[in-house]
Image (cartoon, rainbow, N blue to C red; front, side, top):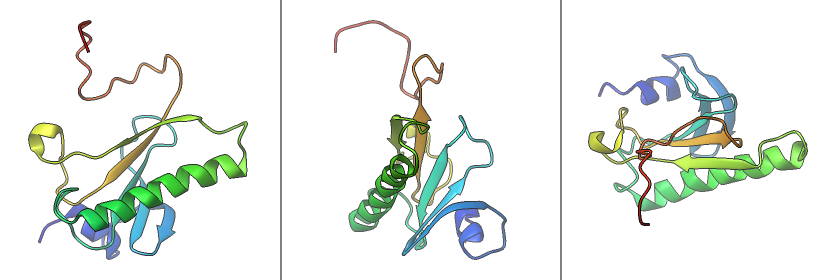
Length: 124
């Protein structure tokens, strides 16, 4: 199997680790979209969020716990808004086929558009 996240997990590719939990690793991506962007992945190879829902659940739990810990350390100096994003399939912007969850800090007027934002105004 040729999986860059498995290579990180098994030590053949370097990564900046920010969360090291049971069954889950959190790293800084090679090209973070904003400061504080982190990717969480299961230590077990799972293709995407639909393959093993329980694994997806504990990866999401780790991502949420990470945000909670950020707020506990210094609630005034940490971002208060985040996107927690995962994709299933290439058409939905998944480019690495190992389940991963992006935690992206947000700020007012940060200019960061989500993948599905078209800029169109319309009915919701």
